[in-house]
Length: 204
Image (tube, rainbow, N blue to C red; front, side, top):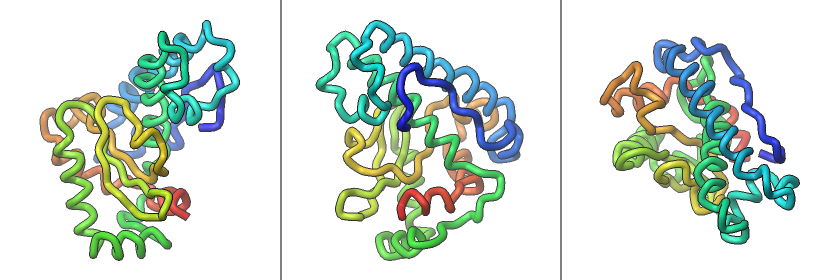
């Protein structure tokens, strides 16, 4: 997230079909190459006529939205958030998921939620209860406390005053080709492709 204008589409760290049968290749093409690319393009378009922002990182822009020129605040919130969220989302999945937390994060989840199963249910509820489009997140605050939060649209959690560790996209474009209206099935299967090693690295 330390890159600056002009932003580029991050490559997937795996093949389009690598997450099958949980996330199909057609969805990955559509989601990454079309939706994610559109957020990148729109973010660059919003920044094009503001050279004073060209040396600012994406994280800086999202943390300091209220200080940005008024004509681009909403565009950067929506499209910059779209780039930030999707960069993390695609990077934190893997075809070789250990299927459960590892390292210090595993211990922290057990301490906070009682068990991984309890964590899963709380995370799934946050994702299911998000009305319309948005995200569910596992974050850690400045006191090293884990929290599960949900955000609408392409918002980032608490303007990144917390550190995101894990997120799931519950916009319909993330799952509709394969799951149609079965959001619950998509959320359940997401746990088969989480890269818990990377999530733990972020936590540590």
